Amino acid sequence: MNATLIRTEFKLYLRDISSVFLGIVMSPMILAILGSIPSFRAPDPALGGRSVIALYVPILLGVTITMVGLTTMPIPIATYRERGILKRFATTPARPGDVLMSQALVQLAILFTGSLLVLGIGRAAFGVSVPRNLGAFVVAFILCCAASFGIGLVLASLRSSKVAQGIGTVLFFPLMFFGGLWVPREVMPETIRGISDFTPLGAGVQAMQDASAGSWPQWLHLGVLAGYGIIAWLVAKKLFRWT
Amino acid sequence: MTVIEVAKLQKRYGGHQAVREVTFEVQAGEIFGIIGRNGAGKTTTVECISGLRTPDAGSIRVLGLDPQRDHAKVRQHVGVQLQESMLQDRITVTEALNLFASFYPNPANAAQLLDDLGLASSARKPYAKLSGGQKQRLSIALALIGNPKVAILDELTTGLDPQARRETWQLISDVRDRGVTILLVTHFMDEAERLCDRIAVIHQGEVAAIDSPSGLTARVATGQVLRFSTAALADTVSLRALASVSTVEQTEGELVITGDSNTLTEVVTELSRQQLGPVNLRVAQPSLDDAFIMLTGESLTGEDK
Image 1 (tube, chains in turn blue, orange):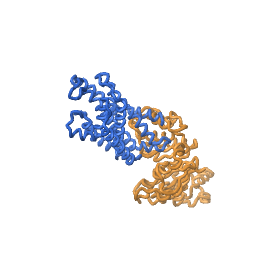
Image 2 (cartoon, each protein chain N blue to C red):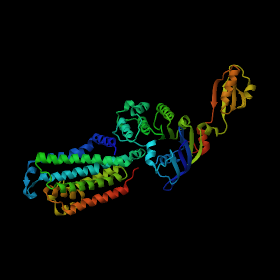
Image 3 (cartoon, rainbow over the protein chains, first blue to last red):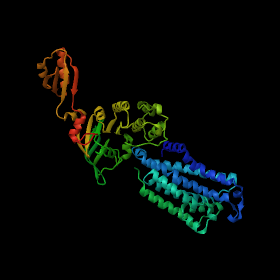
Image 4 (spheres, one colour):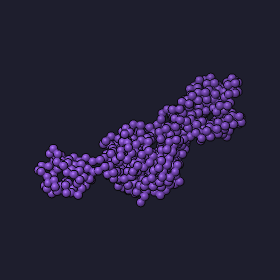
């Protein structure tokens, strides 16, 4: 890998204010706003003694992962193809694959930064403890990223950046809903939660929730995440075009 | 030394045979032009040479290497400027050059290249803010940043104003003088005429002719027509006796002399021997355009004939 390429991709990402906002600022900001409501910080017997804000830490991690995977990652890749940038790179000793790799590295770095901010603010400002089962949490987090990036790569393989952006936006809201951004899964009606179990963000948030609480995630949720990841990566591999 | 060797190249997209049979060789240090109308198969041909496309049939050697099999080596030594390829909106000129320089083991001096291409004053501008001409010049700079042995330039001066075109031509001549072999795709006759040592005329996926610009025009009917007057009466008998002169006529106070490409020099020399000079001299010549029309039955840019 070429350091100049990675550095350049980083600079370009950071110059795009809207991507920086979506990837790094938005979730920590929502957490801070929700956390400023006193009742959300109080332990709630209906939630097994946890506070509302504690539920929102995994939800907002899921939001960050989905935001990066479905929006800030696919659009530059689709644009690079559309504008002939990937083809342009293909005429040099740098392979277009290197461009995708450096793009992925940048997006992951952004995602980690946004996620660490959510965890850090949760811990420092609202006393939400770090995940009790750290190993399980890392597994759930990685699977969630794999599913989200896989779906994002499918979007990036579609006809144009406009289509990728459109479908990404349309997908984003139902995913958020089932992930519990508006109504946390703990208080969802039974049927909705049943559907949510089979959505990437629903499964991802629950898996991270369980790990935070100290237990192992359910195999169902890990399986759903892995399933989305594998199928999406295969589809993306089949659909992706360099030019 | 042969630098590029294309033999019986064929390429089909679905039902469309983009390249039927293209064969040519480019020698070291040459500026070799490919001219043809839009859709004649020029871009497909150079994309096969650059290794971006796999030929259906035929063989290609660049510096003795197969662009498909030895793509890593070919890419190190061949700089390509693609038609209609853009960069990221927010990348600056300097960043783009440094980025591309980092791909090559032995890159050219970026600052020098910016100077040569008149981009030094926009070095910190982001791509989206560049004018069409600046984008084009940056694209040329990127093709040259790797210190290539071969540069493939597709529609070099499209979108440039006349001044910038002439400067770009000068740059390309300079690059060639440094020993770079240049394959130039164009649909501008003046560009081909001004720059190319040899030209391949491609028509409907086939090579219609390969020759020097003057060789191509020489294929069109015959030579030159000179019209001029003289201060005193010229000795037409000795003008007629010149080896390259076919006819000499006196009309409306003017001499009209027909001949070939040597006629002008011979006539002027003879006149000066007679202590005369041609006044109001016009030379009419078949142009490369005429040659193109004769070879393909169509004009290069205009309507079908």
